[in-house]
Amino acid sequence: MDRNSLPNLRGDYHDSAADFTVAQDWAAYGEAEHDLWRRLYRRQTAILPGHAAPEYIANLQKMDAQGQIPHFGRINEQLYAATNWQLVAVPGLIPDDVFFDHLANRRFPVTVWLRTPAEMDYLVEPDIFHDFFGHVPMLFDPVFADYLAAYGRKGFEAIAKGGLKQLARLYWYMVEFGLINTQDGLRAYGAGILSSKSETIYCLTDSKPNRIAFELERVMRTDYKIDDFQKTYFVLDSFDQLFEATLASFGDLYARLADMPVIPPGGVLDSDRVYHFGNEGYAFKDTA
Image 1 (spheres, rainbow, N blue to C red):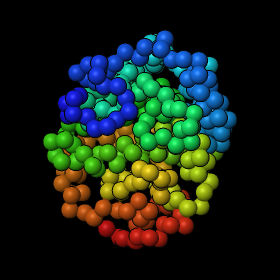
Image 2 (cartoon, rainbow, N blue to C red):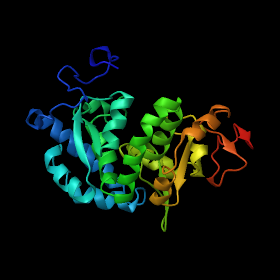
Image 3 (cartoon, rainbow, N blue to C red):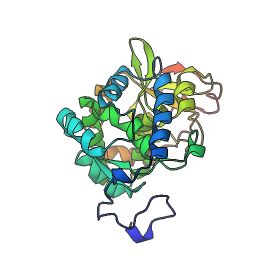
């Protein structure tokens, strides 16, 4: 995708480099934006206890980013020392191949613009609050950080093998909307969950969605919703489980999945290990 042929996205792509990076221009953020950041930050951190994974909470506290929109340069010093990752500023959504290359090289793209006050509860495109508050704390976890780099390396294979849709489902369900089983019960670590007040609570306490144990092929067969709460959340036993699932080539897996039916977002299989059957979980049953 050429920079000049991008769809109608919100960010300013005119001055982006070949890898779609831009300068963060931290000094350009106004006090109203810093104030909105503080409001979003306070609202989300108030509901993290009992909902967020302990690793996420501990790493968020380390960053000490509650007072103002974070400066990527300062955070990068901490992050590189912890897991050899760096944040790179981007205008917004970027092409798949560029995104995979950044991840494979341990660079995480973070959008530079912040939502408006009217968008506190719902946002169509990811902004700096979603990208930073949601994703960056988990980049301080060594195992999860290694997983995300391994995921990035999978992108080029997926492009070559026609498996982008299946690989995207793995990111959606396990990076954006993942849950993990802890000694205190199920907790959220996914960025799409933890940057949203309502979904942070919904994903763990509401009776509607399914909560199903992670299994690689199951996740990669499952369609998802982009404009509503998820109908299914997948649960890890550990972050090691997720990392180890990415070690083998996916080439044969893509070929096998191409001949298998797609599972609807609320579908439940007889083979699933289910933590919770949702109220909508019987819309689809299959033993495949």
